[in-house]
Image (cartoon, rainbow, N blue to C red; front, side, top):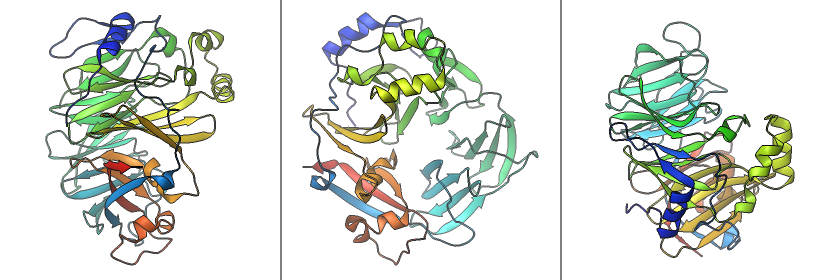
Length: 386
């Protein structure tokens, strides 16, 4: 994929609002200055064109229903991974298991080791592939440890892990982690032994005071091996390729994000008051960004309404539509989990929602019941047309 970086106008904003600090190894430290609250301009206009999702054409390439039996019922899907021809779903709520399915949805294996013992966990905070390809890891924030498993999901060992990262993603020969909101840096770089070797992207002091319960989000693009990162309550999107991080996109609608007055008013960081202010003033309180070869997709929440915006990198045009709980297709797009090496959106939807969507139902090659496990749908977003 051809990486799109900031154009000249964004470069000027970078010079004004951001600085590059000392280099450590091959990494570039990027920091938002405390005086910079929002970018002054951006390419992505969330209000440019509001459309009806029923008027959009999505190319659904594959539909994979997951096998349903008593041993592999999916309660929730807190983490998701497709690797080595397998589909992994981590359920940290109902079954507290990691379920393994084949590429065609057949149940194969699972990890279920709940407890406080040496090879046990209480909470599946993250599930990810080891960067050497030898197996997988579960992070348990509560017990402050990593549990390492072989490729056959056999338990190997425990690694003490005192960090409370929100996300962990292998990237090359290292790992990138999203720090907790009160930390000084947004991201940390870990070596193959899970030691912190670098910190990236200094968090401004005015943000560190706020514990909203909202998360900074990064999404991995398997095709380009890059991470797209969105700091909460900020209108810039950043791309990191393992060596450097650059401001890649700006969101034009500054009025949808809190400005300096918000941080001054809520300097004590009261969660309820801050959230009430953001909601009543119809500000964005949550955003996840993902990218394909030709599109950038944003999922976000304004007040109590959720939306999706799709930015075309070639035409520089943006279309947006609300997420309608009664519309299976909008729910499907909203449940995009990541982008695979083919550039497809990998989405997961409950069976009863999927059966109400003709585009999905027509692609099914086997009988699926409304109470069955979720359906995985692969969509070529680059083919989207009005």
